[in-house]
Length: 156
Image 1 (cartoon, helix red, strand yellow):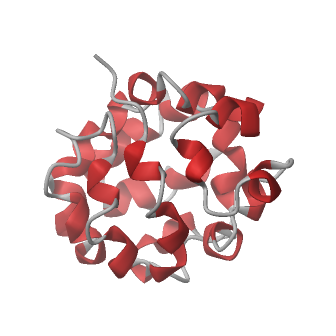
Image 2: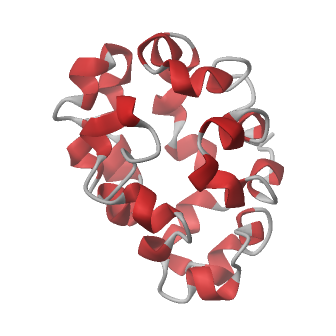
């Protein structure tokens, strides 16, 4: 689970404390995100144990997910079809990630490398559009998220 984000991450980014309670429960399917983000974003060392290595191809999200859509374009339409376990991220991702609203300001202050997430992340959370601008440049390993992901359905 994303419980790993509670140990250290919350301490490093107090504003993200909300991610400890609710987020993991809301998005249990993201359990595989436990391994590896640090290599790409040292400041997120608390999230280590694999996210980056896996993110390179989102192998952790596999279960036919990566093989189905290497470019992660499935994150736009048919996400559920590609990864049933991620149904929560399809049409109602924002509702499950409302807790991430805190990432708008203090998150950037704590993690300069993700400064790009500051401009409009919360405001554009429904489509996660901000991940298209700068985020990829800041985290090359997430380059595959550039196409499709930022075009995720916008909730009303």
